[in-house]
Amino acid sequence: MDASFEEKSIWIQLIGTVAGIGGYLYVAAHMFTAGVDALPAYAAVFLVAVGLMVVILVLGHILVAVTGRAEQRDERDRLIKWRSESNSGWVLAAGIFVAITCMIFSINNVLIAHLLILTLFAATLMQYAFQIFYYRRGMR
Amino acid sequence: MSVPKPPAKIVIHNAIRPLRSQHNEMTQQELADRIGVSRQTVNAIETGKYFPSLEMAFRIAHVFDQPLEKVFICDIGN
Image (cartoon, rainbow over the protein chains, first blue to last red):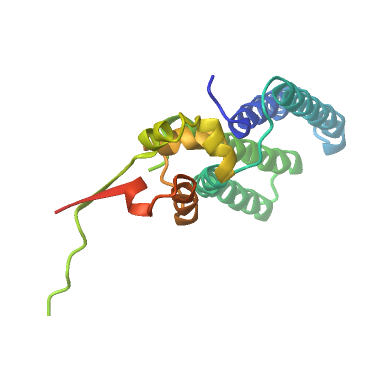
């Protein structure tokens, strides 16, 4: 794949986020349906998920840096990042708005916390998807 | 008083590929190193997938020792 260091980094972050946070949300959904109703019980699983994500990010970036050429972010990378963040920011805003609405109606804290994590996960995935799209298709 | 309309279509081409050839077959990587971007960004500019900032455009023109309009050619349609 003819990709810059920055684009490869996006792919690594995408894989790390899906494996780490996506994996956590999958486990958390099973825990919730099994009746686990206290937030501290989820904390250990979340820490493991974040740890997994960090390991994937570190190993992935080391691999890319060793096999290729580590480069500084340039103006195209910055523009792609800004545009992608701008395109996906509304997902985060909508999720926070829904979470605040849930708080007003005193909905379970476990659900609200996971709604926020899910929102952050979705917004991040959307941002990475836009970044990869702009790297592949180009920006005119 | 009528307000003048902007041109309907502006197409920007560039002459980076032939200019690289004229400069001892300069590679995309060599050009990228001289203007401070990745090789993929030079490739994106050359193929019209990305339009560089004015500063970057001037940097490219400076590398080839050409005026900007010889490197980036603008076709304005109606």
